[in-house]
Amino acid sequence: MVTSLPKNLQNQELSWYRELLVVLIRRNLKRRYRGSFLGIYWSLLNPLVMTGLYTAIFGATFAQYYDNSAFNYVLAAFTGLIVINFFSASTAQALSSVVENGGIVNKIRLPLFIFPLSTIGANVFQILMGAFPLLVIITLIISHSVLNAFALLLPMTGLVLVCTGVGMLMSALYVFFRDLSYFYELLTFLLWISSPIFYPVEIVPESVRQFLLFNPILPIIESIRQISLSGDLPDLALIIHSLASGLIVLVIGAIAFSHWRKQFMDLL
Image (cartoon, rainbow, N blue to C red; front, top):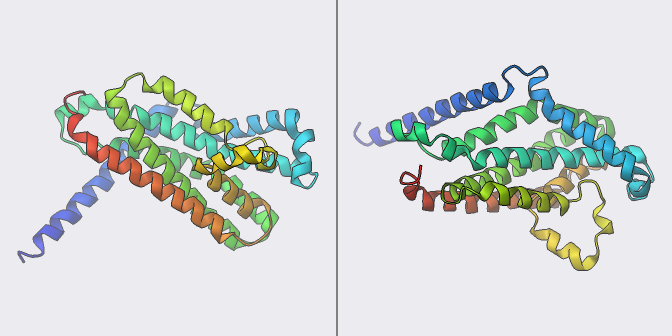
């Protein structure tokens, strides 16, 4: 009985963390969409509008890289925008999550990592209810394969891992540097422009393309496009690359957050 007690306490703690995470995710969603007409479907409107804009400007020029099909360019731009919009929104919201909840932490002892996780979780729910089902439908129509539709979950998991790692890192740094949000807007723009969202990666000069390998979003976009738009079976190399990028970024973010959190209470 004595030996099972620590395990029981650990299970109770994990159960409490899960319940707390669900509560915070619900709170974030209610706060974000209170009084909203479209609710979570606003997240789908942005990539649709931006896809139309990119197609009108670049579609005729870049269609040659997509089998001379403007429709293929539309789908490629749409998938890229889903990824980068999710990354931008979730990490930007996670950045200030610890500081915004500083008043609660000073009154009630809560695990600080739960706040960036809850913002990521709210955005995961949002994309699962909005853009992801449309992406699954596109995949089924083009590939005629249920396997490809399920395989989408793998690079999407890599995307969530990347966002969680970046969110934890940025939320920790924001405690110390409150003007980080302005710098992060610039960093997000650089990541967006260095990702093949509205342009094919083939137009990037070889001397520059090697630096794109450091972009953790790139293999995720390429993997999702390969699964959804190529009509071929999922490329395991791209999937592994996207998951590996996610794990590396997650480990870096988790280590940084854990290392600095002891100093948070003096600054919140």
